[in-house]
Image 1 (cartoon, one colour):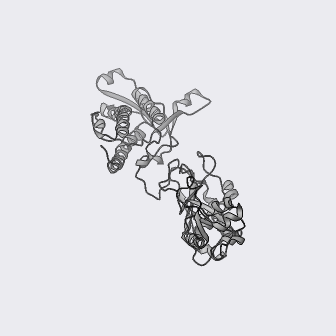
Image 2: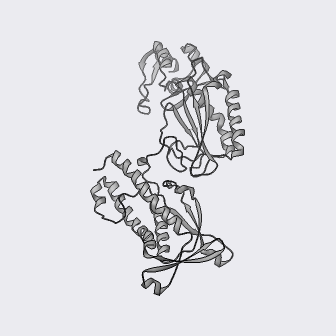
Image 3: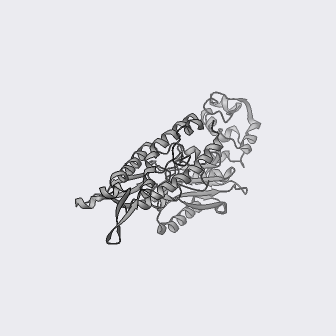
Length: 397
């Protein structure tokens, strides 16, 4: 059986092996076009025609050059074996393949999509655009060649590209939990390796396939400040803008270099204007994390420290953080004011919602007025014990 640690090490080694083969393909295919010469082929040699600048040149190549490509032919079968081994968590199934390619290709394959470039003249359609398909993990440094133009390739080279097309469709990013990534690395389309909780919140666009626009960010930033306020009043935390909350998928915010300074000034101004007191500004830190495999796209992190100097409010509303959610507590519910029945003036159902918190300070203040557990909603929220003060319960009946 394969342990999780073994799978992680396996993934790293696979990435290195596969990266080498893709580099061979990227370096050779753009120039080489096989020339059909029966005489040379009988001698085990091939004539390759390529373009250098504006000149057409030919070069005689032995079979070794083409053996580099032939190894690609085994990729599909090899990946099938790996997939079976992964699903069974049994390395022995994988070893039965006995293929000539060095052991352990990457469990998450970076593959290329190949498509002809549209043109008005048929002769120009001998060019192809090679792009890394969306949602697939770039392997090593290959993502730097995001778009590549290649002459039309023939015979077995064309088969190699066809295999890559099939792999692009067949192997989407399915094993992201095995990736060993830098925790501060952001790659478009991948799930971020942190989870939402009391100190982490994600905000993203409605679409999970496109980055958030600056306009959408500005339209929604007022809502995001509720979470910032809650972090200030509880234990601090990080708000990530550009990550889908449920799937943790990284899509980022589309920002050009010329827009970075203006957007940063806008965010700082909103933090200063909409959260009081203004001294709380020293408890923030803005970070723009560049997404490596997509141009002009960033994840914005607002790092918030706990404010110990008093309560902070967002437009006179007081928020706290608990059970991974942001909760609004009325002005009379803030820590500096006693939470008694006349001040709350809420129905039992509203009180139950307000009390779904983990904040120790508020819980300790409420305990003096609590007489029994109100358990009807415990099934819906198992992380928090819902407590209702007896006098409030009777008042709302």
